[in-house]
Length: 580
Image (cartoon, rainbow, N blue to C red; front, side, top):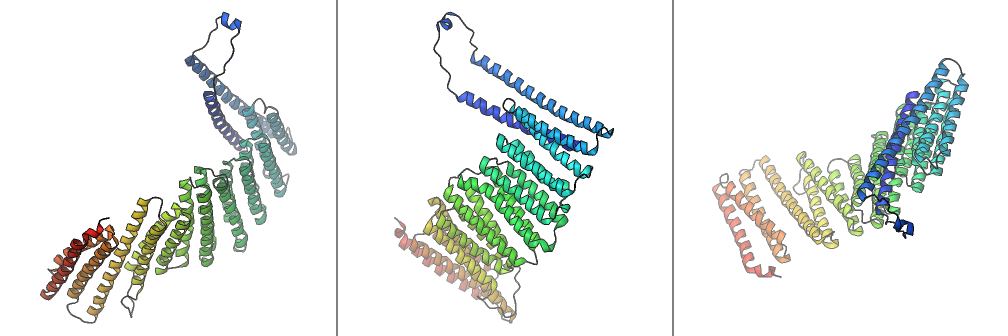
């Protein structure tokens, strides 16, 4: 009990020291920026010489006064803390010698707490720092007195002690609002969250515990919106997860699934609203505390829901993830509309939304459906980016598309060819075709709706057109290989020669098509890609010479040469069309 009291006193001392330091900095800044005072000299002032300190001497004097004031305040806090601890030890000595009965001990503790708060309130106008210290210590003494009446002396049952601590919490919150001091609110809410733990949550019942936490957090949200004390939300967030985690481990059972989900949903809304209100309604730049609260809230909500629902309620888990993603998408759009200057939060919020939307896919689906839905998601994100001009959704669309490509490659590598395999009508080819169409669609969105800058727009178009063509060539090459593998399984001869020759011809034709389109549409990227593919094909033909038969060498070189000559003629004949 006394150790807890001492720790609370140390915490208050530390908090007040930092608070006073901030006030001193603000005061010095205001002094530095305030205009110098002017006065009309009197005859006495003009006739009698006076000593005027130089600016350097003024600074030295201010430094001396400042250091002396800080030293005095520190000594004062240490002295007050020592007196409180000394009184606590005196009372312990009196209790150990049975000078005072157990009921009297509790009443003395409550009386000391009330008197300490009253003295702090009385000294508030002149001694602000001492007032906060005394009133915070008084609240701590009241908490400990009620706790002792239940845990040490068993004078009251758990519910009465619980109600007593609720009254103390409410009293501390009212005092903090009345006196405009966050210190008392912090102490009151810390005591409020410690109350069920000190009383033992098992003695309170499920509904009381969850309702109590909700009331505390609603109070924190109300004070935050009214007084703008953002640090209170950290107390609420940490206190909620500690208290709720204790309850979840010790008291949760499957019959409480719905109330528990409803509880965490309400807390999710409260904590998200605490930051979103400042960003959207007040149009303030997001601070590190906002990123922390939003991230911790989203992560904690996802972990608890996954733990409670998986794997028995898999479909509800994925549906919930989609709904939460939709919730964050709406918030992201509102934030972008009301606070477009804050670029970081306008990327962060879409990122949170996309995270929930992306997680829902592997929860609900498996196999090629995962990458398929990720490709669909990337298109949806680009549609959102195009209609809202949000850079955040555009970036998230790229990331989801890349994630889909990685999953597609994993699917292709792990694919086992089934009986009745059909060329151009199989899972890998269809998924590659879908990835290609998605890349073209994203390139279209870049072309149609643009991006933040023209340079980013051009790079986006070129990148996704290149990706689409690489995927197309890879898909066609893969199908040719599989066709000849099937032929070899049927006993056909010279399969490898035909396979290499066919692929070389395919690449040469595809390079010619790229070059032609590049000329027709004046797209330098496609022309360069076609030229590079011609060079790669030439190297391939030279390498294949050593493994191909005589006939296949002749076919490869002649066909590739003819296609290359045609492409070269196109370059020479129509080069003037590229000008302008």
